Each structure stands twice: as C-alpha cells, then as structure tokens.
Length: 138
Image 1 (spheres, rainbow, N blue to C red):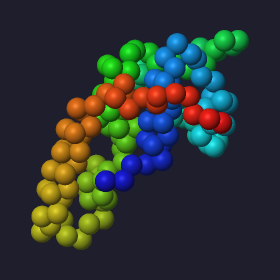
Image 2: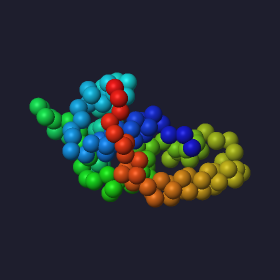
Image 3: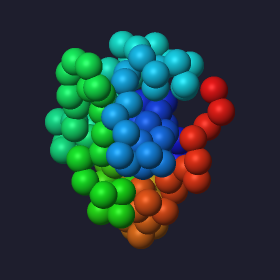
C-alpha cells in the first residue's frame, strides 16, 4: 500500500507535535522543517483541525498543537482521515473507475482484505508510539 504525500506529511506533522505537546507550531516553522510549501501544509493542517486532532490559534504565540494526548490518537484513524477519497486502486473508487474486468475480477476482494489488515495493524498503534524522541535538527 502506498500512502499519498498528503498523509505522509500529515503523519510527520503529528509526530513532530507529539514530540513537544506543550508547544504550538507555526505553519511557517513546520513548512521550513519539512521542506514543504506553506500552502500545502495549511491544507493538511486544516483537515487535521476539522477532524479535531489539532487546535490552531492565530496571532502572537499562536500556531498548532495536538487537541488531545498522542496516546488517544490511533494511527489507523489518522490514515483513514487523510486518505479519504483515495482508493487503493481505481476499481475501488466510489464510481468503480474504468475497469474492464469488473464482474470477472477476484483481485478487488483480495485488495480489500489486505487494506482491512493494514488498518487493523495501524489501529493497534497510537501517535504516542511513534512520536519523535527529540526535536529534529534543522
């Protein structure tokens, strides 16, 4: 299974925030740290905030911080959230894609089973389990 860069960076941002739970991170600092455009990071941050995983504050001393303890944030939930609307393969999209094998293919069932197993495994871990030990060197 390959995750989108949106999910990859979302997980990295959460790991970074979990490494310093009492600190608010500015989008500029995180964008610089990850070598990511501030605009792209803002879209990820917005999705995380809408889901209640992070809280954002404007102004001096503002930034983003985890909305709840890292030990309460399941990795499977984060990946489901950030991968929403991204089917594993085209035929698993809501409209079924343009598969010419539809109705004759047994692969889709295997892929669904593998995807379920992936999420079962991801649900066993929390953000606290993967939080950075210390701040990365920038």
